[in-house]
Length: 629
Image (cartoon, rainbow, N blue to C red; front, side, top):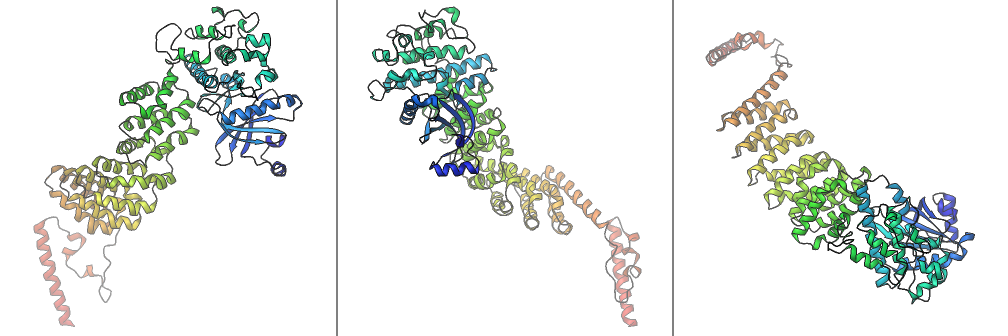
C-alpha cells in the first residue's frame, strides 16, 4: 500500500495504472490509525476537488489476516446504512491487498478531544453533550430501526466533521441477530482492544452472550464508558468496568455533569436486562420536565440551535425570530468551525426561500462571518451571499444591498461582473422605488470592480433613464453617482455624457437635485477640457446663479468662481496674441490703446467708451490704408 501513501509521483501513477485500480481520490496526509487495523488519510475527491477522508484496511499485514471479514463487514454496513448521524459513505476501491473507503472529511474523536482541550469549560461541555446526543440518536436508530448491535462504541469509532458534528462509524462488528453474516457473536473479540468496551456479560460468557440480551445492551454499556471517557479523558475507566462491576460512585463522576450522572449510572448497570438503552438516554435527555437528571439534551445550546436550523423553513415567524435572536446574542460563543460549516450554510439555505426574515438573516450572516477563518470566509460567507443576488424576493435583495458595505471589499472583479451585475442591474427598473434607490447606492461600492464596457455603456444607459425617475431622491442620487463615476469613465464618454447629465440636474424641480448638479460639475472639474469649460460648463453653471433657491445660488457662485479661476490660470499661460496681418507687423502696435493690456477697463461705462473709440479709430485707420492703396 506504499503506492497509495505517495500517490502524487509519476512512478506511483504508473503502478496504479498497471494494477488496474481507478482511484476516485488523491491521497493526502496520514491523520490517524487504529493499530494495524485501519489507517485514516485526508484526501481530495478527483471528480470535483472536494475534501474527503479515506479509510485504508491493509489486507496484507500479517496481523490483519484474521480480521479481513471485519473489514468487509464495515464496508457492507457503511455502504447500506444511511443516517444523518452516521459517517457518510461516498465510494470504495477494493483490491486483493486493501479496501479503501472514501467518506466525508472527518477526523477521529481522540484527535479532536486533544485539540480542543484549551476550550472554555462551558463551551466544551456544551459540545460534548451535543456530540453525545448525536451518537445516542445514531445508536437508537441502529438498535430500534435496524434491530442491530453496533458492538464497538468507543472514541476510535466516532468521527468529527469540519462543522464539529459527531458521526458514528466503526461498523466492523455491527450485526443483526437475524443476519446469517453476523460477525459480532463469533469474531467480536478480534477487534483491537475489544474488551475495553465490552459489557459484563461478554467479559463473563463471551460475545455469544449478546444473543440472549436486548440488542441495545452492549451499546448502552459502551455509551456509558464513552461518556466517562470524553468528560474525563485523563482518568482511567471507572471501577465498574472491571469485575465484579460495582455500581458507579459519586467519587468517579469527575467532570461528568451532575444532570447526566444518574443516567450514566444506569447505562453501566451490570444487569443487561435492566440497563438503560441509548433510546432511553435520548428520551430522558430530551424530556421537557424539570425532574432530576432530565432535559440535559433539550436544554443544550447547540442541540437547540441545530434543531432550530434544521426546521427553520417550516417554523412559525415567532419561532424563527426566537432562534435568530438566540443566534445574535450568542454569536461570539460558538466554535468557529460550527459557524462556518453548520450555522452559515443553514442561514444561507433559509435565505433562498426569501421572506421577511432576510433583513435579519443577512446582517447575522455577516456578524458570524467576523469569527470565520480568513481561508473559509469566501466559501462560508461571500459565496452564499453572491448566490442570493439571483433571488427574485425583494426582501432578500434589499437586505443584500443595504448590507453590501460589509462585504463589498471581499468581492473580486470577476464575481461582480459575471455573477452580481447581471442580477443587480434589474434593480434599476424595479417598480419599487426603494429597490431602485438601493441599487444606485450599491454602484458606488461596486464601480471599481465593473468592467469598462459596463461602466461606459450599460450602466450609463440605466442612469440616463433614472435621471427622469419620478422619485426626486433617486434623481438626486443618480446625479451624485455620475459625478463620482466621472474620473473613471473613458475620455470620449466624459465629453459626451457629463455636461448634459449635470445640466439636466440643474433644471430639476427638486432643489437638492439642482445642488447636486452644481456640485457634480465642481467634483468633476478636472474631467473637462479647458475649451469645454469655457464654451459649455461655465454657461451651464452660470444660469444657476439666479436660481430661486439661495442654497443653489450660493453653490453656483462658488462653482463659477472655481471654473473662472481655472480659466484664468490657463489663460495666463497663453501668449498675448496668436494673430498677425500681412506684412508681419504686430497688430498690437497698430491698434488703439484701449485694446492693449494697459488699456483694460474695470467698469461698464469705461468699457463702452473704450469700445466706441476703438471701433471708430480702427475704421478710420482702415479707411486711410485703403486710400493709400
